[in-house]
Image: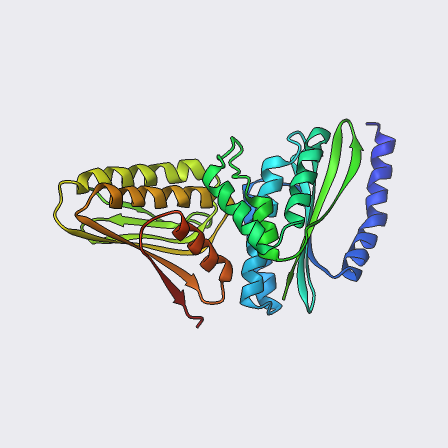
Length: 186
Length: 133
C-alpha cells in the first residue's frame, strides 16, 4: 500500500467516525464493537453488556436471555469467522420493548448454503418442534473440533422466541459477510 | 475416593465432588474456552466413583446442579454427566441417586433445560426454584 493511499484512508476515517457515531445513535445502538475477536474480547463484551443492561433496568428474564444469546453469537464469531481475518462486528440495542443483538463476520462462500438452511429451518419451527430438534441434537450430536455442539442457532431461536433475521453480502475472494440479528422482548 | 474440587473462573463453574462431605455440586457459569478439557476429568471422576460404590453399603447420593448459565457446548457435556450418574444408579442396586436442579424462578430457559435432561435419564429429579432477592 502506498503512502498516499494510507493518508487518504486516515482522512476518510476522520470523516466517517462522526457518521458512525450519529448513525448508531439514531439506530438506538447502545454499544458496538468492531475488531479482532479472541477470548478476552468476548469476556470484556459480555461483562459490558451485562452491566449496560443492569444500568438500563432490563428485566432479569430478558437480561438472562440476551446474555445467553450473546454468548452463542460471540462464540460463533470466535469459532467460525474466516480465520485469516478473525474479526467481526457486534452491536447491542436496548429499546423500551426489546433488546436486539446484531452480529456480522466473514465466512467462506461454501459455508453460506448450510448456514442459510439451518436458520430457515429453525425459523420455520414452532416452540415444540424446536424443543424436539434440540433434544435430538443433544443426544446424537457430536462436539466438533471447533468445540461447537451444533446447538447454537437452535438455542438462539428458542431463547429469543423470535425469528432470526439474517443476510449475506459478497465480499470477494470467495468470502461472504454474514450478519445475524435477533431480538428479545423486554 | 479423593475429592475433586475446581474453583470457578469467569467462564467455568465451581466443581465440588466430595464423597467424605457427601457433597456433589456444580455451580455458576459454564462456557469454558476448551469445553472438552474442562469436562473430561469430571466425567472420568464420576465413572471411577461409580465403580467404587459397587462395594459400598447402602448409599444415598444427591447431585446439585446450580447453573447460572451454560452455553450450548456445555449442554452436551452436562448430558454426559447425567448419563454417567445414571450409570451409577443402574449398576449399583445399593445406591439411590437424586438430581437436584436449581434455577432462578424467572429463568424458564434454565427450568426447561433441566426438564430436557430429566427426559434422558431415569434418575429422580427435584426442581428447586431460587427466589429473587
